[in-house]
Length: 291
Ligand code: KIV
Image (cartoon, rainbow, N blue to C red):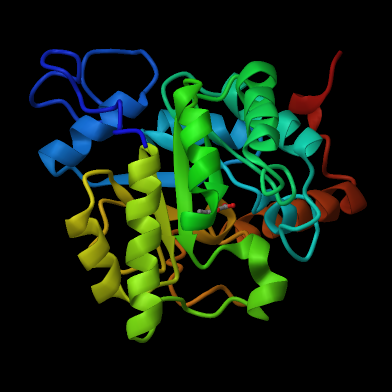
């Protein structure tokens, strides 16, 4: 089994006093910077992104890590779950996010069916995300069950973020999106999964929908950073789906989401005002008209 190759060597992480995104460098954030942030105890934010325009906004806002999540399925492409998302779609969306950003580490998500068959299948498809989309790392779901694939990818030089707890690609097996890790046996399994992905060489692990106390315990026991979503305040980093975070999502959002804006209302109002002005003949006005 691999030890993590990501421990920042002396002088190779960012300089003292620098934050993960900030400082006087203008290169992309790397997995080595992320390892250094854990050592400094710096907490960081990750957002999903699915297109160049939105990703550019987040990059300029100083979000150090952008995940092209397969949540694109239900948050961007109009599917009910992440299950139908294909590799071709993930390559296309990931390439757009890479093109739209300058500094953020872009992580491409491996969709359902693109890695579960074998480590060789995982290698083939992860290489597509690296070569065709230009991402700096990939993410895949699963703990012990994905360890052999993680190991192979890391050996091949592909940084891997793991994802355990509630793994949305298993929605049909879970019968929904229930909180994971409740009860002794489930908590022990979560710890085993976390240790297995670290041992396999993952540079970070997403903990989704797990009790806060358990997530904090996992975080304490790992050398790699934990990225929480619905996992309380005790993880090293936090991730939200951008459409949830910005209030673009229609209807109810999960309990763990905080909406920092109401973009759905802002955009709807803008569209209604545009249509009203066109109807009234007040748009275009003289200042929008060529002479
Ligand atoms: O697909 C996704 O957006 C994710 C995050 C919620 C972690 O997996």
